[in-house]
Every structure is written in C-alpha cells, then in structure tokens.
Length: 310
Length: 130
Image: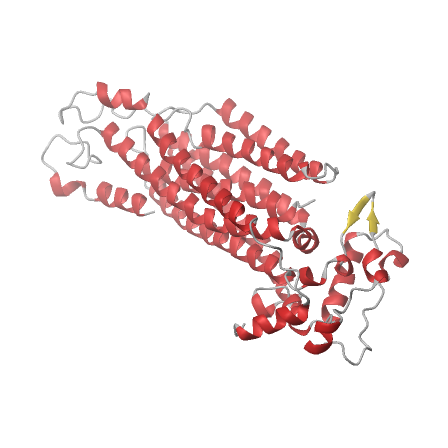
C-alpha cells in the first residue's frame, strides 16, 4: 500500500519540479515514465511478496494443526456453510475480472468505462463482505466464535458435553440432511449421570465418552460419511474450538484485506472520475488491481481449505 | 520484455509523452476466457469434494487451487507479460512459504501425538492459566 501511496504522492506533486519538459506524472528521479512504471510495479510485487509471507504464517498454523488433528477439521468444517463460501468465491473471481478489465480500460484511456468497472469491483467487495458478515453473525449467534466465546471451548474445559453444543450440533446436522430420518441422528448420550463425570479425578481414571456405543455410530449422507461429535476421540473434542480460531483468523485477516482493497478501489475510482488516468499514466489503477487480485488469490486457497474438507 | 522497452527508451527527459509507457493490454477474449475457466474450476473443486478420493481429496483441492491461482497471477495480474524480475520476486516469496510450512510439518511429525486423557490435559491447561 505504501507503494501505491508513495506513487500517488509522487504523481500528485508534479508541480514541485515543473518547468522541465517532464511528463507531469514523471518524478525527477526517474528517467522515463516507463522506468517509473516498472519500478512501481516491482515495488508492488515486493509488497505482495510480504503479504504472501504474512498469510504464510496462518497457512502454516493451518497445515500443522490439520496434519496433527485431521478429524477435528473433518468434523468442525461441517459448521461452515459451503454454499456461502462457493458464492463468495464466484463473487471475488467476478470482481477480479471487472478489476482486470478496469485496468485495461484505464490503459486505453476509456475513463467512464474505467469508473463503471471499478464501481462493479467495489460492489463485488461489498457483496463479499455482506455474505461474510452473514456467516460471522450466524457463528456468533450459535456461539461458535474465538476462544472462550466458543461452545466447544466450554466443552473442552468441562470434559463433559455441554447441552448447548449438543443442541447446536443436532440442529446443524438436521439442517445439512433434511431427508435423513431421525433415527440416524439419535445419539447415545454421554454418561452425564455418572456422579464422577466432569471431575478431573474421574477423568484421569476413566476418560468419559469412550463408550463402544458412542464411537461406532456413523451417519451416512448420500453415501458419504459425516463425522459426528461422538465419533471424535476425546482429545480431539477438546480441540474443535481451535479450528474456529484458525478459521476466524484466516478469514478475518483476509476480510481486512478486502476492506483495505475496497478503500483503495474507491480512491482510484474517484481519481478516475476526474480523468486522471490514461494511456500514459495508469499506474495506481494497475497496482490497486494487483492488490485486489492478491486478495482473490488468498481466497482461492481459503475456500477449499476451510469449507471443502472431505 | 517490458524492461526491454525501458532500455530502448532514450535516456532523456525531452520525450515527455509519446507512448512512453508500453504496457501489455490484455484483450477481452483472454480476460473472459480466464474468467470462464476460473468459474468452471470453482464448480469442479466443489464437485470433487463430494467424491471420496481418500487422501487424494486434499491434493485434488490444492491442485485446482494452484491452477486457479496461476491463471489469476499470469493473466489478471499480467505476470506473464511482465518483467521476469517481478515473477522472481513473487515466486521467491512462495518458495519461502513452502520451506516454512514443510519444515514446520517435518518438525511436528517428530512428536508423539497428544492423546492424553482429558484430565491430564485439564491440569496442563490450568497450569498454563488458559
């Protein structure tokens, strides 16, 4: 971003060295507009490299956690709405198309087309964030949030299953398989009547929930097995909430990038409206475009990794 | 490619305009074609999740994602037409992420899985004040 801004700063202060035969956008420390353009682009790609590295940390957390606890991911991802995820993927790809076309329009000096395409890109970002907020608020309502704001966290802390999680899970599984007959969903209740259940001592001696009946049940959904909470190993149940921490941090950081991208697009859209861009000068449009595509790029990986776990 | 233009430009401030910047302008057919393939691949990645490929599912999903990412980078982000140095910068970042993740995975594989009964874990977590 700083690249974009410094570029803008450079372009907006052409008068300071007026009097030469300069292109109004050419900063005096560049020989040619092309050199300036290439330098701006190189700087932007370096910035995008650091962005990749930053997201790399989160992807690393994801990889290590999924490698160690594949069942947690298999179970917990069922709480994410695949439909919204897929729609959002299409929305972002479409906004990438309008952005790339916007750069083309700016390069060709088609001002009004540039403005329209940038507005469409902005609309795409807004739709994406709208859908994301629907998803987030649903999670919030269901108390599947970060850390102790997650029902699975409470579950982990108390070693026995909280009724809230159980109810939640049943609602979800019902919603996911409306055709499914109720018997498949009837679960063997964990031994909550056990007077020792929940106390650390009892847990040490006899881990709860490891009952043969509780582990054997498989729900079949159109030939596909859906992992239920009861099938999770006890030590995996205690880690379910961490999946959501990873989910919220990855999509959250991505969401922040979408917001920043939208602000940048708004900025160049307003500049484009003032006909500031044309065949000789369109660097800001190009660089903001690169940023927007990177945001799309990250989502292209987040979608299958978080929503489409088999 | 484009850097060649820069080199070909006369090193003078005299030529202030006159097509000083020679970007590659991506034709609409390429933009729309790439978009179509991206949408198809999105549909494909959703569809392939419903098919049980065992451990191959994750690799199928990743392969499709990499293909989509490559299309975005090469055409929407013009990297195919850009100075190769930009590609070097970007690929270096990707390589370092790959190194980071693979070493972390190699490391985590060296440890015994934490299958402690919950009581033990409880004590551990309460000790850590979590």
